[in-house]
Amino acid sequence: MPRTTQIFCASTLYGVATLAAAIESDLFTEPDRRVLLVFNNSATPEITPSLDEMPGFEPLRTHFDDVLSWNETIRPFHPGAWTPRADDIPLWERYLRLLWNLGDDRVELALESIQVTPALTVAQLFTGAPVDVYADGLMSYGPTRNKLDPLVGTRVRRLLHLDLVPGLTPMLLTEFDVPPHVVPTSAFLKVMGELTATVSALPALPDNAALLLGQYLSALNILSPEEEEDLHVRMMRGAVERGHRSVVFKPHPTAPARYSRALETEAEKLGADLTVLDTPVLAEALFEQARPGLVVGCFSTALFTASAFYDLPVARIGTESLLERLTPYQNSNRVPALLADAVLADLEGRAGEDPIPADELDGLVTAVGFSMQPQIYPSLRPAAERYLAKRFRPRTRRYFKRKRLTALGLPGGIPQRLAFLPRNSTARRVVRRARAIRKSVQR
Image (cartoon, rainbow, N blue to C red; front, side, top):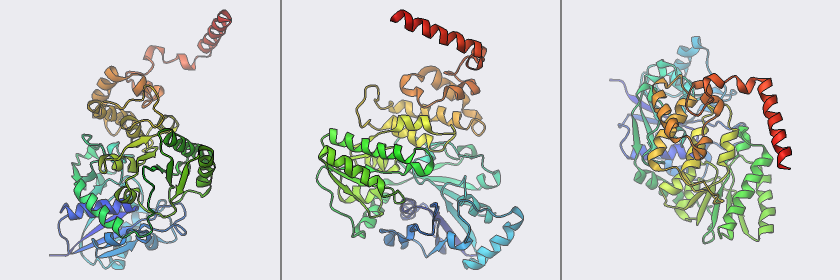
């Protein structure tokens, strides 16, 4: 019998913690060898620390026999851009087996974000390997980002995920009937406790401090740098208005330093005490050690771990405009942003921003998921039609685009017989004239 080697692929410390919790929960059978393959997907990996160099990694390392770098393996290519030619795949598999001392081992893969490189590349190189997919965050609740090659999709045995939104079932890979399995929260908290205990550089947070989570959305071309600075300033203002005089800002590890300087200026105006964390640690390590009085963010996964796992008060801000800005409609950040907007409290306490009822959430995500990927999930059309026919209202309208609903023939779109109007110059001229007459009458 050949040996069995499990290769666990990860690009974030959060992902490795999820894998460690799954291993400790016996969700993986005991192999002959466990390998952690590290991806550094940052824009400039040459100057950005990989996850195995970050504070808190040491207790996670003990779950694996070896730690390897995908970046070093394919250097000088970037993990997010490189894929082998189809004819070279057998050659690459032989090369990797030699380089990583796999020999004739039976390989099993555990991958994140299997729809895109580099995880998809690894799955394609080990052509016969069974695959387990694990969710590193909220994207698993949304549809599969791209139509997956059946030669890869049919090899996926299960989807492992944390129960970040209790009661909501992930949609990812359901087109291949992949069953979801919850990674026990208790195991994840145990792993996070061990991780936090090894991070010596964590500062003590002031009592009742508000923790602001930066996401560096301008790097994703979702917001401009100036708009993201303004979002952080709004976070601080909202936290201060809620009575938090001490504010802690945790920037994204790759965010520019000027973000924190803009907050420092605003803190002086508001009379708030600001602490900027420059240690690249998981937000969960702060939840574990310091228990902030409020956690504020846009649609960070950490908002959901704070609420669901640590029972901390959380609030979101900027999600409504973000949903409007996300392009194309199929953008995989849409469902995470939707969940933050629909489930979490609004920081600014605006009217009409109450959370979506829990019994409606599954129908909402299903309708949005179908609208995003109708070709991958055609069977979801009836459910989407039922939801939109009954629940399409001002509070839920932001999750859909009128143009998209019209193109798909769904409730909430423009009726087919009137679809010509937005493109009809005569109709637009008549509407402009009618508006002008109404305004003159009102004067």
